[in-house]
Image (cartoon, rainbow, N blue to C red; front, side):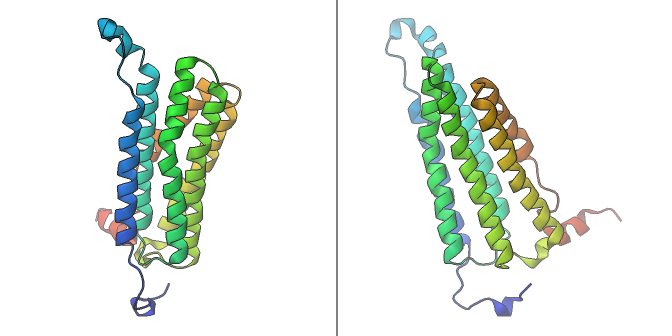
Length: 216
C-alpha cells in the first residue's frame, strides 16, 4: 500500500463525492412517496386508503433498500483516501441507477394494483437493484486494485466487504429468476435481502478497531 507521501498533491478527497451521493439518495427516497396518490372518493376514505396497500408495500421496500444502499455506500467510501476520474464516473453510474428506482417502484405498485404485468414489473424492479449491486462490485474492485483504500482497513476487511457485495449479485439475481415465474416469491426473496444487509460487516472498521475491541 502506498503511503500518504505517494498520494498526488491535487488528489480528490472523497468528501464531495459522498456529499453529492447523499443528496441523490435523499432525493430518491423523497420521490418514492409521490407515487402514493390520495383516494379520490373521500366518502369512502378508509376503504380507499386500504386499497393503496400496493403503494405502501412498494414504498416501504424501496425506501429501506435505498437506505441500505446508502449505508453500504458509506461503508465503501468511508475507507477511501482519495478518488480519481474513474471512481467519480462509476459512482455517477451508480447514482443514475438509484435515481431510476422511484420509477421501478411505481411500476411495481401499479402492477400489484392492476394484477397485470406483475412478472415484468418484478423483473424491471429486480434488475434495477441488480445493476446497483453490480456497480457496487465494480467500484469496490476499482478502489481495491487502484490501491485507493485506507491501509488500516486490512486485507481481511477488504475481502469481507467484497464478499458481502458479491453475495448481493447472487441474492438479487435469484429473486429476479424466481420472480420471472412466481412474482410474489421473487419480491419476497428480494425483501429478505434487507435484514441481512443492514447487519455490520466483520472487519469493516479496520484492523485497529478490531484489535481495540478484543478483550484483554
